Length: 208
Image (cartoon, rainbow, N blue to C red; front, side, top):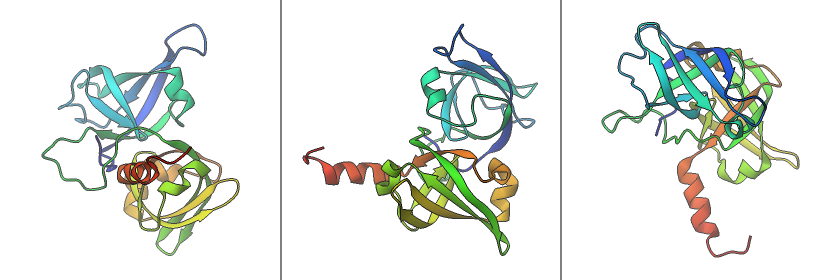
């Protein structure tokens, strides 16, 4: 489990195919800030851009670890198939503060940035999310974007997608990869865990 509070900015420095064709996944080599892996070990869970991954090897002194990601996971996530910056979060300890919201590290869908522009001292991030996720999104509710816990400021259901608007403060832009987004960027989305169970309970026993 995670909280959506990014604990480090990493970078995928290399991708290595795990097989001869696209049916196989990739091994990702991830560089971290100095000291980030001092309390990490083999088999630990670390979220990359909101997707929970298992550490398969690490070199704490060099600030580097690897994860293996399946073809299925690559098809359902964005930003994990090539070199580039990633948000990092280590798995939640039972004694940790829950600074964001409860996050599972399972990507529910891929959104597309339709607007990213300054508004006063902050920036407005507008994302077109898959329509199927619309029923889980609510004004002032929580959403995870590339592993970052954020608050939804506006939701609008449209025929082709559900559009949600988020306000990003300068601190968030400076301490996550969200500042590198642009119109057309793809992002990993995870809906609020509580909303998922509420929807299931309300729909239990109904057809479809």
